Every structure is written in structure tokens, then in C-alpha cells.
Picture 1 (cartoon, one colour):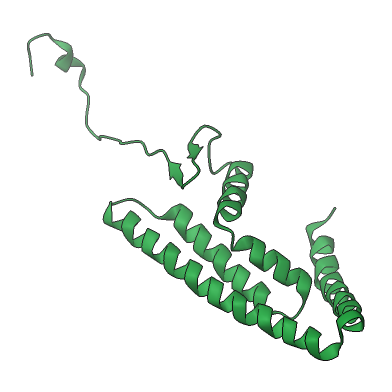
Picture 2 (tube, rainbow, N blue to C red):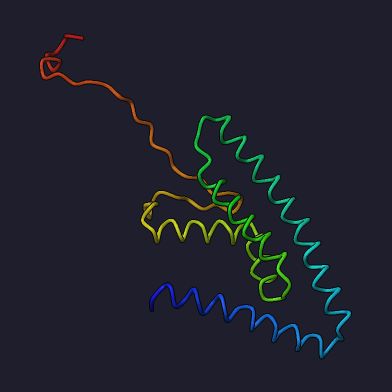
Length: 155
């Protein structure tokens, strides 16, 4: 299916589905509780986004201090930002997606799956542990080779 059509369906369909769910929830628990619940999820989401953002920022600083590129951490930061945007939209379906993106293990698995799918990450290049994700790094030593250096005893 054409990506433009998919985008259009999401752009038009998502607000309609959100509106339907809000109306259904409002008819069950009432309008005021529905509005308060929507506000509560936005406030809770903002708090969790800030907490997760600070955690990722500290990991970025630790990675930079080790002299490594914080690529995975930067992608996690982008997902946390997207999570914050979805949590600020009124609606319960976007809140579910926003809260799911705030779960660190789910976020890492999603990022790693997208990197593998795009070909930016080799299938054996990542080990996933229970605590964290580690990317194997290869040390490259640059130098020059000359054929006459192959003589034994010559340095």
C-alpha cells in the first residue's frame, strides 16, 4: 500500500477513533470524569517523560565520557519526545501508545528492531541483557603496509 495513503488514513482515522473512544468512555463514566482522566494522563505523562528524559540524558553524558557515540541513547531520547507529544494529545489510544514508549525495555526492543529492519544494524551486533543494551564496538587501528616490511627481523 502507498505510504501516502497510509499516512492519510492515520491522519483522518486516528482522531475519529479517539473521538469515538472518548464519547464511549464519557457515556460510561460521565463527561467530567472523562475530561479529568484525560488531564490526569497528560500530567502523569509529562512527569514520566521528564523522568525518563533525565535518565537518558545521564546515559548520554556517561557514553560521551567514555568517548563513544551515544547513538542508541539519542534514538531513545527521540522516542521519549514522541511519547510526550502523544501523551499531550487528548485521547486514550494515543495515551496507551505514549505510555508504551515510556517503558525502557519496550522502547529499546522497538529501536533495535527498527535498526535491524533498516539494515543499519547487523543481526549479531547487539546483545540484549536484562539491564541494558550494549552495542559491540570495533577498534580500528589505522596504519600503512609496505611489502618490504615482511622481512623477518626488520622492524
